[in-house]
Length: 324
Image 1 (cartoon, rainbow, N blue to C red):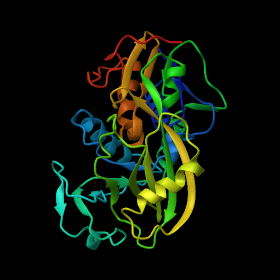
Image 2 (image 1 turned 120 degrees about the vertical axis):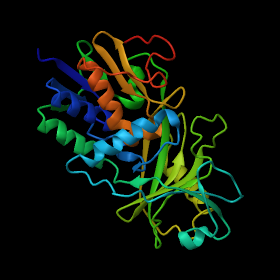
Image 3 (image 1 turned 135 degrees about the horizontal axis):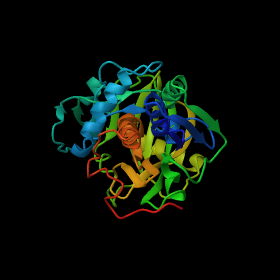
């Protein structure tokens, strides 16, 4: 018997869900109240990168495989490398010490300390979600923009930071602001201030440094704020912080803000809440990285296929959620 599903949310996770469900023989309608990739999937930095969390490694590796098979999406064949940098010496398990970071990346300020990890594939923001949306449509899924979707019936909630408007889960918006710049010596590595991987730390500053370069434009800045910021007001602080690490910031090409869906422990929340209600959300900064594999897991669950959601990712790991 053919099943009907409503997928709520047109980001990377929702679009991949719609594709997997439709390819599995379901009748699928994806509902998005703005546009495909209107949120973090199209406005974050844009990189497929190992989250360096053992509980997320399997999702990351599976997602790489899905991206390699995704028509209309160019995943870099090899990682560009993640370069962790700081003004003081630091340690990082599994990271190679770089003796002369400025020689490796001429855009850097002299005198910095760096360690390299062989990961990080920069991609243009929104490209992945749009490719999944096109795949979903080719499989027969319908996409309705400007709609919040139904409030009953078989539903999969992939509404990112707005998930808790639909179901009572510990997922909250974590706001980020990114400044796009064109650097004269655009980095070939993904650059991150050492310590940025501690995304759940209560002591994390509002503004940290990162730089992800795709198609000649570098997205600068990593911010983690509970309240919606004014991007124009925050941009000078982002750029001032970036000057600690970059010798020349080049010219500003754009500015954007987005809310990431942050869970209580920084990991995705996947699985069934009620008989006809499923969730795939809470990916934080790792939506593009983990979205396809997360979507495949929840799609298989909804289609009745044999699948096991890892306990560390199960939506029920905090308490029994309820729909609203």
